[in-house]
Every structure is written in C-alpha cells, then in structure tokens.
Length: 379
Image (tube, rainbow, N blue to C red):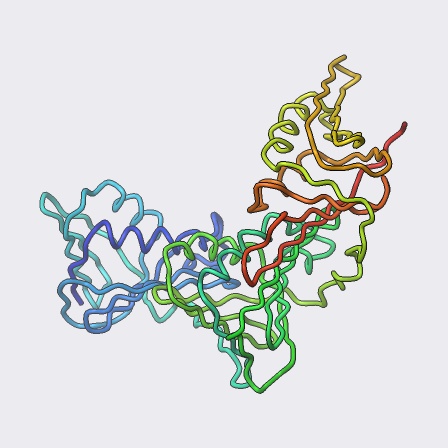
C-alpha cells in the first residue's frame, strides 16, 4: 500500500496519541503505532492495553489498503525534523518494508504485521450512553484532576469520579486531603434506558489524555460505558479505557453542610501572599498559619531548623470571632489556582474541621466546591 501525507498534520496526530505508549513495555508490539489505510482515510492507534487512543486523517493520495505497525519512537523523531511538506509512504505488503520519501531523501523502516496489534476492547450492548458538549467535559476534568490521588492501597481514589444523574453531571476527585466537586446542570444530558443515575471512575492517565486533546475539539462528545470500559467519541479522536474498579467513597458525607464562619477575600491577593510566605515554611510539612480577625488575614510560616520565618497581612471581609487555622500551603495554592473567580469564599467551622473554598460567583449552570483538610496547630 502507498499514501501521501502532510508531515506537519501527521506529526500532530501522532504526538497526540503517543502519550498513551509506556516507556517500557513487556510486549514489543505496544511500542508501535498501528496504521490502517482504508481508501484515503488513515486511522492511527496507540495503546498500552489499559487505554487506547485512536485518531484519523485524510491523506492526499492512496493506493491499496491494509494495516501495518510502525515503531513510534523512530517515526516521531524522524517527523519532528521535517519542515511542512508532503511525504510518501510506500509499504511492501509481503515483507512490510516501509520507505518514506521526502523532497530530498528517503528513509527505510521495517514494519510489523498489523494483525498482531491488540484488538480494541468491546463495549457491551447494554452500555449506558450520554452526550454532552466538549466544553463541559474539558472544564470538569481541568477543575478536578489535580485533586486525584496516587494511592496504591486505594486505587479507586486514583481518578475522577463521574456521578451521572438524569439532569446533572458531577465530577469529583479527592486524595483524602483535598476534594473537588464540579457539578453542571446541563439540561440535555440524557442516559439511555431512562436510568436515574450511573457512574464510573476515569483513571488519571486517560483523564490526562483527554485534558490534552479536548482543547483541539469542538461540538459534542459521546460517552458510552459498561461495567468495565469507557468509550469517548470525539470528532477527531476516539478513546477507550478501562475503569477503576470498586466503589467510590460517599463524597457528600465528608462535605460540611454548614460553615458558620465565612471569609471573603481577593483570590490573587491571597494566592500571591501564600506563595511568598510558603517559601519560609518547614519543607517537611509546608505549614502556613492563617490568623483571621477584624477583616484581616495574617499569614505566617517558619522553619526553626534554618531560623527563617515570614508574616504577611492582607485585607478580607470577616467580622466574626477570631479563627486560627493551618493548611499545607502547596494544597491551598493548588486549589486557589483552579478557582475561576476574582474573589473566593472560605467557609470555616473550627481549626480542626475541613474548610470549604468556593468561587464568589459561579458560571451559569455550574457549581464548583473545593474542600481542604487543615493541619493541627501546636499553639
């Protein structure tokens, strides 16, 4: 088979799916891209057996059809060095010898039999299905993924939980120190079979894959899922991945229903002050203390081992009783970086209970809540 493809377009598609491929594979065929030519449509696949990412493009000219597995590292490193130009791919169907011809030279590869490439996992016929705008999925993953855990003992925490109802979609991620809940009341969200609710846990790796390709997409995404696998159908990409098995914790049970003390503060002022003060915190615990009283937040940190300390005061809106509370600064900075609002509301109960951090104003049809557990203070 033979085809002509634009070097820049081909590289863009291959780079997008290449992140699926592991650095070390026990099965050598997994180091390859699968090329499948059918007419003028070239379909490219990468997989690690847990996650499969597929993309396609129209080639300029084509002769014949078939499948061939091509070494991903060698092909990517070659394509990166080309300027924008057409490349001719000529594959010998009998011995799978591949020649890439450019305007100034040629490059010889040896492919592998495409039939040896792993088959795609099948989605069961009774799978649930929902359709939603790409923008909603993109925002939901961006707002929650940073809070997912890396916990070998509790793998169910190592991903983003999709809690699907008939009139809303809630994405949740937590590592037991911080929790993020993103809820959208998208009215056209529909489940098949008129089910009232459903859910699955999307692992971190495929979630990161989606995070990188969704900004390139538009329109709607169709999500199908059964008890084992999840299938995302986009206009230019298809992703199939295995779910994290198990039951996700009851996240609503850990979110305080009422926070009697509420602090309203400028997000950037708080974030920038935290970044400065946290430099002086103990590197082992990153503890930053917040002393909140009389419309002011006094932030302080110290590292006794190096005899360094810092303190900074910023304005806020708070006239209740004085509260002192401590947080791991890196967690609080992460949360503030992911809240899309000029001002934030910090809901507090006491120094030992979880703090709720909310945007002062939510966008239409969405609700963002972030929870952060405090660190115990000695004083």
